[in-house]
Structures are given as structure tokens and as C-alpha cells.
Length: 288
Ligand SMILES: Cc1ncc(C[n+]2csc(CCOP(=O)(O)OP(=O)(O)O)c2C)c(N)n1
Ligand code: SF4
Ligand SMILES: [Mg+2]
Image 1 (cartoon, protein in one colour):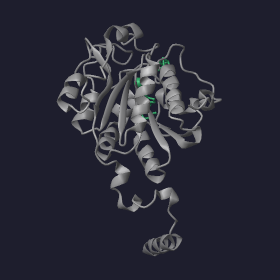
Image 2 (image 1 turned 90 degrees about the vertical axis):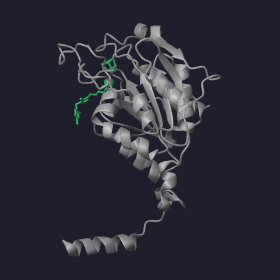
Image 3 (image 1 turned 180 degrees about the horizontal axis):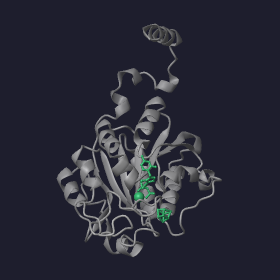
């Protein structure tokens, strides 16, 4: 175990007091420290949003890029340097809305990275518009007559696309969430952890008491993680009961294991073929 204070950053945190993001941040630091992954071996990639600010508050390598575009950056970084533990911190808007296409194709590729979706069912940073996971009927300043669209079900979508690690956590259960993050990091392939995260300023429906009434932990001893049909049934539970834990896990080759050019060494350890590069550049120059 690494002293958790080694992951403390010096940036000022402006999240609202009581925001579920604090629990997620704590669970991330706890998971990294428990797995003894030092800050210099961690890369956190994020897009835009309150969730997207997370890497500012952990001492590690970080890339804070465009809205919805964290997954391709993270995949590229892992391909280039296998030694890095690559995490993505994304919001429900960022990952399932603006970045929905990347979510779909990252599942197909199965890169060896871990995705944490801070799912507060609202656009927090832009002050409370509906997100893809907002409940039907939710009233916001932009949806005064309530949301009409069917909410996006990330767990069911991930399962239907062949995701190899699908879990759900709750920001109010930090110990369990840390365990899920640790298992996600240890999973070889794309690990998806959708995290129920109360937004205390803009979501008055999905509050801490609302979740406390519904959440239950899957029993590790009896839950069969490789049963896809049962996992799909669990994925449809929401209004009455919300399962937490690893809903499904399976194995298939990770993206970086399927690329011939990486079979010897990751890109970062390969020698740059300067002559070849020069020839290509010169030919390109002549063509133009
Ligand atoms: C391409 C693009 N579209 C829209 C925006 C405006 N915008 C910034 S943050 C945000 C919503 C973020 O919501 P979410 O991903 O759920 O994160 P949260 O703030 O709730 O953590 C939007 C729409 C943007 N920055 N870029
Ligand atoms: S607006 Fe919501 S998500 Fe953003 S910091 Fe405040 S409570 Fe958290
Ligand atoms: Mg959100």
C-alpha cells in the first residue's frame, strides 16, 4: 500500500460541498494506493464536465481534452505505453452523449483501460440540463415539460456489444467502489464502471436517500459473473432495486494484444525509424 497522500494534488477543488464526485475521487486514490501503483505510472484521461475535472485533483499524469473524446486518447496512450495504468474519468453526458460513438467502439476494441463514468443523470457543469441518463419526467430549466426520451441504459448497451467487464458502483460506498476500481484495473481488457453519483445542486430526483432506498450489493458467493443472460436481467433493474458490483466479466484478447506491430514491444520502447520517416515525408512533399 502506498501512502494515499502521495496522490494529493495542489489544485483548488470547486465541486459543490456534498457532491458525489468526492467519494469517487477518494475511491480512485484508495484503489491506486492499494494496488501500489505510484503516481508516475498512472494516466487519467478526461473530457469536459465536472467529472472531467477529476484528474486535476489526483497527482498523476493527466490529459484533459475535448468533450466526449477521452476514450480514443486513452486507447492511444495505452497502445503507446503498456506500462501505464490508464483510467478514464467521464460524465454521463460526456461518455454516453457527446462521446457515445467512442463508447460503442471502445467496447468492440477492448483496450486494456478502465472507464469510470460519474453518472449523475444530469449535465452538471452547464447547470442542470437533461443528460442521456436523466429519468423520464425530470424537469429542468431546458426541459420545463419534463424529459420525454427513454433513458440510455449503459449496462445493457455494454453487455449487448460484448463488453468484458461491466460493473456498477455508488459514490456513497467508497470501500466497495475502490474494490471495483481495483478489479477493473486488474482485468485484462476494457473495464467499464458506471457509478451512481448524486449531483446535489441540479438533480433533486436521484439523491443520496433515493439511492440508499434502492441499492443492494450482488452476493459474490452466489452471483455468476459469466452468465450473460442473467447480467442482462440485472441491467434492466433500476426503479425498484439497483444492483451494485461486477455484473458481468469475460475474457477475449485486449486491443494491444491483437496488433502485430506491438507484439515485440510497445511503441514507446521501439526505436524510431528516422530514415523511413524521412523517405515518407520527402515523398509526400514531392507529391504536393
Ligand atoms: C462539443 C461540446 N458540446 C457541448 C459542450 C458544453 N458542455 C460542457 S460540459 C457539458 C455537460 C457535461 O455533462 P456530463 O458529461 O454529464 O458531466 P458532469 O458535469 O455532469 O460531471 C456540456 C454540454 C462542450 N464543451 N463541447
Ligand atoms: S454541479 Fe453537481 S456534479 Fe457539479 S460539482 Fe456541483 S454537485 Fe457535483
Ligand atoms: Mg453528468
